[in-house]
Length: 260
Ligand SMILES: [Zn+2]
View 1 (cartoon, rainbow, N blue to C red):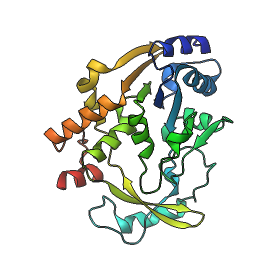
View 2: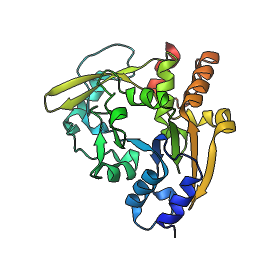
View 3: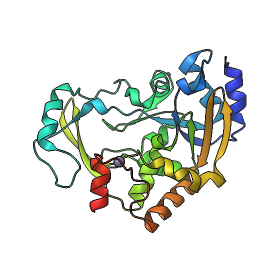
View 4: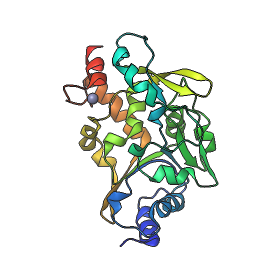
């Protein structure tokens, strides 16, 4: 059984003290940890300068009857799901796909959440980073993190959760999509929505030389400097416009990127 001290001692070996970090996490990957998700949030606070995590809320998403073409969306089929959508609220729980740790962080008194009704981030000691986000520029917090020489931390998860790769795809000129969110003031168009991340694990051998890795409990924890990660993703896409796309035959977003 892992305790809080084991976690902090291990995380400190990654050398992220004082640094801004975006973390992607799986509580289950650690095995049993005393104190559960709250211990992990506290451990991240101890071991970093500031920390943000995706706190996305996909259940706000709605499909209009029509919209831009080549948008990897079936407007008529989407109508049947609209009745399940819920209007975005600042205190809306984080989507379960993000894991339980960002939801735990959201309840911290000093935690702040950015403004996007689908692609928000939650963070501690990261107010300036979170404030950069707008509806039009959902990945602005990642731009701020790059400028601050930030790091990506993957705790028990692989690169298919690594949102920063989406930001690099955007910088490399890869197609972005339009999606829509239900909010208390009506439906809001959200440009700059990313493609699919199912093929992102192909980055791993490309960045291994500058990835730091440790074991904590049952989990592998990796950290990568954001600037170097960005550079490598952009180079890969420049060399091969299909780089990091997935191979699923039914993947609408990867198919659309291949077409453009
Ligand atoms: Zn895909």
